[in-house]
Image (cartoon, rainbow, N blue to C red; front, side, top):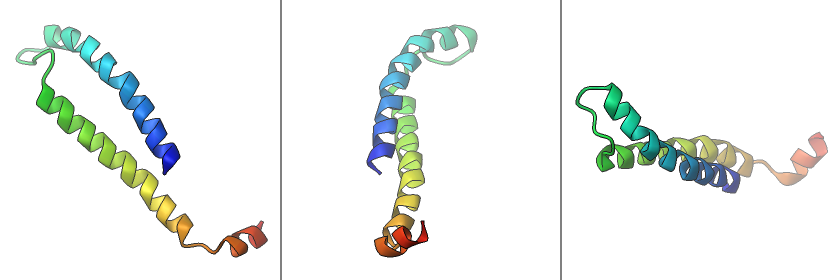
Length: 75
């Protein structure tokens, strides 16, 4: 789960400034779209965090239910 959160924070650290920088370009190309809309950015970040957390939590939960000795003997 720590790896998932690390990758998520790296992605957000790169993606948020890129989205802010490209926001003006998108606003110039589309009618009625603002360059920076904090509500949309916030909702997008919440959805991304929830999806990444679920994607990491499900396999982590399954792995935590396996007995370590059985997993070592399997290999």
